Image (cartoon, rainbow, N blue to C red):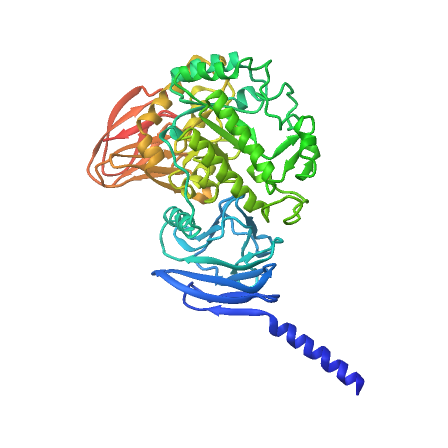
Amino acid sequence: MKTMLILSSVLLLATTVKAAEFSETVKGVAPADVTVSCSEPGSWKFNVKKTKPAEEIGEVIVTIESDEPAVPPKFTVALTIPQVNISHRWVPAFYDTMIPPDWMARCPSNLASWMPLYTFYSESGDNQLTVSSSEVKRQVEFHGGVREEGSILPIKFNFFTKKEMPIKSYSVTVRYDWRKKHYSEIIPETAEWMTKAAKLEIADVPDSAFDPLYSTWYCFHQNVFADQIEKECAIASKLGMKVLIVDDGWETEDTNRGYAFNGDWEVSKMRFPDMAAHVKKVQALGMKYMVWYSVPFVGKNSKNYKRFKGKYLAEVNHEGAAILDPRFPEVREFLIGTYEKALKEWNIDGFKLDFIDAFRGKNEKLRGDGRDIDTVPEAVDRLMKDVYSRLNAIKPGILIEFRQAYVGPGIRQYGNMMRVADCPGNFTANRIGISKLRMTSGKSAVHADMLEWNPGETTEGAARNVINCLFGVIQYSMMLRDLPPEHLKMIDAWLKFTVKHRGALLKGGFKPHFAESDYVLLEGWDDKERIFTVHADGLTVKVPADRRTTYVINGTAAESLVVELAEKPALVEIYDTLGEKVCETEASKGLNRIKCPPSGYIVIK
């Protein structure tokens, strides 16, 4: 009898645990039923609603509540669709567009790393399903790959996969969009929805954020000196560059890379005897002046290293530095005060704030011991909002640059220049990064990674580094004084071109074609003109039947372009890569192969 009672108790306990699981199916908001589930809800009550904001767009709103503060449970929002007319997957990270098997399809995102937006599309580029989340601060874990049993796509978001402080309520919206529009339309619209759903206020974008820029990093690395920078800026300004970024090196006399000497942020007097006077000289050339800071790092050789002992998230031995914990108010005030001091004393125009994605580590215990914010993402958000508001109050229109991977909607609250991740000498990676950023960055200025090439390259070969980046703000990082005269002429010609056509290149409509082939055809336009850049020989450029002047730029080593005119014959002017007119010809309605110098362009009028 006693054994039976024990067995009954075990069975009752198992039944209770199973009953405690939460699962609810939502119909009619996606191409398949959506399931919201939680294996261990504990004291949390789930409320699931659906909305239909438009035809072929649906939303699932999940709200969880607890009577008393409690650690929120992990839960999942999922659906499964057949892999029909779906050949590619677009993700915001620097991955290709292949659809991986479901057992290796995990894509995490958070405030400082990418964004929860994913598109499954057909061979023709038409969206089949785009999924996104309104959560842009906490970590969101996405899974979306092919299950080999049946060629189906299980697609899900996991929430609260990392430890959180006790809270009483939380709400998130997951959006499903299966309109048959090109991914280049769906992705920007979804990014804009995420911005509105998260109630974000995006930082102002001054026109100077779109100005051509000179960076010291690839040409000088840490070996920077005031007089040498001034000599380079004298050349850069004559070429039309309007902004300077002085990167790592100004704050140390060490040139061994790493960040062992970061953290005091005192100017090296050997390199910059009078920083304020130096800044003034560069500004007198017509250039704005920006300065680099590695935000989270305090080097072990700095005076401040001992000051912040006990207030680090981690020690990064291979970098010779520790990572500050922004949940301490004194840490945030130290960083903000450092930037305010530089802005006031040197009268600079902006900041390159680097390594926002490095705020992580093993010491992420929750509130206590002087911390006033629960989680690291919340603290980073608070820090950067305060940085932007206080710097912008001192100098309205302050320029602030961030780079991939911290480029999602949340980051655009406190930065106005979004740059491609480091890809030295790799113009294909630069083109891919620009294309992705243009689709997700709204009206923020999208910047290429700094350009560099070997001075022994042909002028046309060097120009392809520029042409691949025309739809982003170009940052040059060549030692200009050492370049052949023809390279300088080429830079001058393309700088003039980018300024003249800024509307179509940087501020108008944008359509990156063939994502699965590394965006080998890019298209931009405004009210007056349309511009294509071609990056593979033999591609057909279809010129629409409108009255815009059309530019087709040859970003290849081939000596011709293929264009298809939708209307009557047109006059075609042909230019080389120095912007010099070669000849004129006429193109007929339909297909035309037109001779064009490598790295040159044609104008169809």
